[in-house]
Length: 185
Image 1 (cartoon, rainbow, N blue to C red):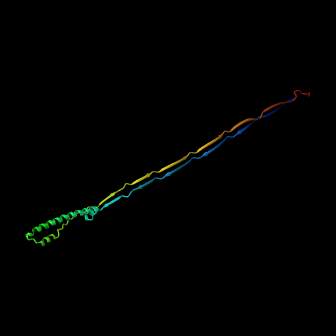
Image 2: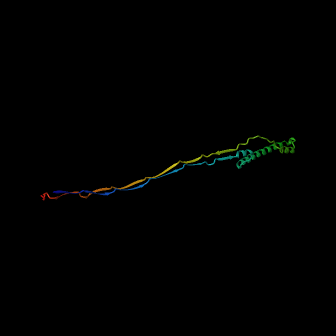
């Protein structure tokens, strides 16, 4: 009798696996925001006040140099005119001596106090001048400054691989064991 022996070996696949590699480098973004406050500056120079007493003082008789010179000139002219008038008047009176006017009477008339005049006059007003100055201003508005450094992402990627190979070959062996002829009979 013939027996059939079967020997079988399954095949085996081997895998050579190289995993993927990713090198990820991240630089985060940098955002800087600075706010500058508003700046307002105001400046107003002082007003100029000018008070001129000269007209009022001159009308009361307190004169400056130029005005006093004018008054002296006017007084000198008036004194000269009155002196000439008095001399002429005395001359006329002396001319009348032959009409029995005494010399003492002529001299007494020339020394007689002159008549005074009283006047009510207004005093010139004080001159007041004001010069105001404009307000100077400067305004710097609110400001925002932004500084941005963009972030980056860098990837160094190496792809993985899978390689298959035959690690063990499959086979089937068939063996016939025994004989085809029966020898016992």
